[in-house]
Length: 122
Image 1 (spheres, rainbow, N blue to C red):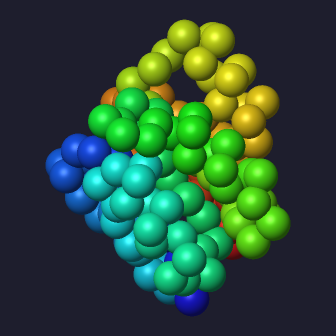
Image 2 (image 1 turned 90 degrees about the vertical axis):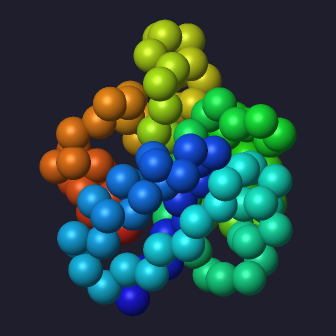
């Protein structure tokens, strides 16, 4: 069973991402409505993947991945960005901070599934 943390301040987007990822099967999905909430949830489970938005009201996705990739306990967790930010500079920044993938909203369900499968090696 793989554990995935979905971080987005939009309940609708979290629900959509969760429903798409659940189709993969054998996954436990946890949700955080902000980067700050994600930081509180991270120590509670051994996550295999984090799927996060960039634009959030407290700790944004760039700050979240920076924390994850610079912490010995979490740095091996793959991070996928799903964001409305489409500028090349944002995509490059996300990838340079250690993201394994960057999808833009609106995303295609099959694209998200393929990305998650690849990130989880399934």
